[in-house]
Length: 542
Image (tube, rainbow, N blue to C red; front, side, top):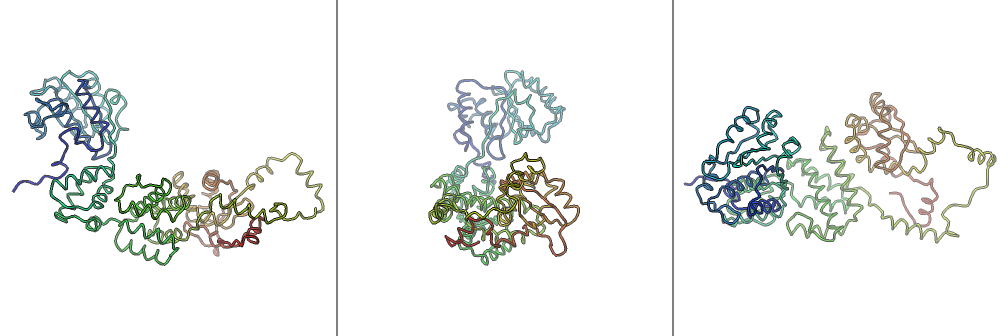
């Protein structure tokens, strides 16, 4: 019985053409070998599992091969076999994490003096080079700048920012990219075919997307699934084995949003909890699902969607039921929920509340529709006016006009500027409160609990009154009024005056949902345009 070799080792690339998803690097290295413009130091940076160490070994074999096949090693000569098996004295692989001290680098400096035993170059591959200490990097500088002609350094790192600029300036730098999902799926399909395995296309795409751009991770998952399923692998087995959120679940959620089915939404949350899904992973997948719908809606194609063909067709069909504005609002809302979930003391309750609010989120009106409705309303009014007939002048009008024409004091100017044009009401504040909290959390996390536990008491005449849980939280809001107003400007495009006070016993405290939501259906007839739209067009409050 032969020893088992994992897929990542068994199918490691042995030619530059075999490297997946890094053609910009493999082509450059082949051209350098062909033109004999080989550098003495290379730096390979990028995420894990994308081929950095594999490319380093392949380059070491290519420059030391006794009978190269063009720019590729023949993988059969004595030097290539020894390098492949890891027993070559001319290619030394060093783990930077466990050999990070200055003493190890001093020993390396001593060893570079000696010529290679069989090959043309003595190659030092230092993996995770960012783990070296500052003193070790300094000890390496001189040797790295002027090494012997027979020495080549190849550094690999996943954290380029931790490599000193003095090292970077002495190396040719190559940035490895995350591998595309389609390329990973194609590689797994080729391996499955060579191994005589039967695996569904959507199962390959699921494994590839789960790997998040890492071919090595995908091949490790591939080994795990083959060990479970045997020679025939189906998508349902992968979902069950890895406890992944099924893609159909996300399509169910968008169906609930279309049908405004709150009851089924709560049952769906219970199903998510009972299956033991990771809630952050679920919300991340829901955000990606909405992104795919937006891409299909805006571009009219599914080329930018990384999914199996059967799901890409569903995205193209499903996107017709939503507008771009609605998809953007849904995506922003889910993003706020995803960020808030990290701090929620009761994740399930928070998810239930947000799913219900997501389902009941009213559809956004396009600007063109609003303008068209206003134009139609103007046509029905005499002389195209929306304003009611002016009231007779009141006593003291001349005095007030004279006062208004006088220079405005600084205090009065601030009051007018704060309240002028405030297009904010309790409904808008309720719907986008999570978005505001997300911005607060990103800018100043210590302020977030005070607003999370606060509730809006009123929004009128440019003043937003916040009811806080206690004196400490009220003082936090008061001390940070400037920041909160700036975030109101960013989210709602208004700059209100803020008043923070301790909520009375009858007010209570809401967890993240403003009390103004209770007044969401309160008629808004203060403005004549709203009154006219209700009277002429039959508009009703949401």
